[in-house]
Image (cartoon, rainbow, N blue to C red; front, side, top):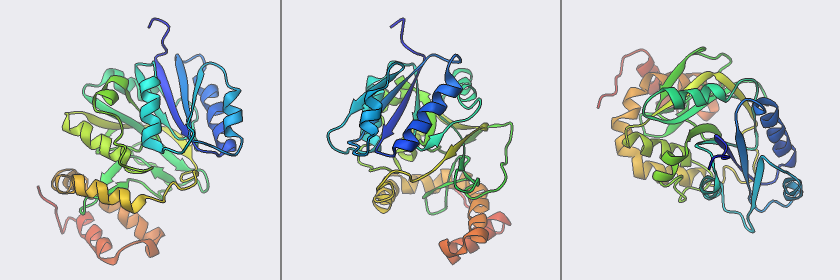
Length: 291
């Protein structure tokens, strides 16, 4: 369609009226006049006034309402099918964008070949520490946010390839997303993004982070966000564990080690002693994972 926007921003919302309003206001402030876009919002049966707020929105917003909760994967798949843009941008309603956050991400999709997902750097709003600069895999096969808890930001000025990115804020081509079937709806509010990135990689696509695109993230603002973490992790490892341990985890071993060692220094109670020792040996090159 000739009047279709270039970008469709997809947001799954469950309550959190203040976050939702702030998220949408930040979008308007940073994108208006810079790119043609629409915002497709799926309200996941909110009860706190969010639905009434969303009902009052006009273009470029389009709002879909669920009668019962369906979760991140189902909601975003629905929004993607309804979207009219060539590019999709997935955005959590507790992510607040700033500055020139999107156009550099879009440029990666347009200028590089064989691109799957493009993500960015995310900081926690509660303490200013970084939370995501890309996803790496531990030797056991589980994903981990590189840079979690960091005070500093490595790779400034770079567009760097990673094994996966978080869907809290990322962008891809709509055709690619739909051709791969979107997010696997077996996951409930977790691991859908990593699973999709792995499926994209099997198709020869690469994932990037624009390290000068930095946004703020509340993280876990939605009620029940972490209720299914263990189940999701088990599904992911059962499906991908063997492949990841022999491939992505080998490539990511030093980046994983740096992240886990930092976690050991700042949150030792959350670490496993054996994994800390393994990370130290990997960082010192006294142990090497091999394919």
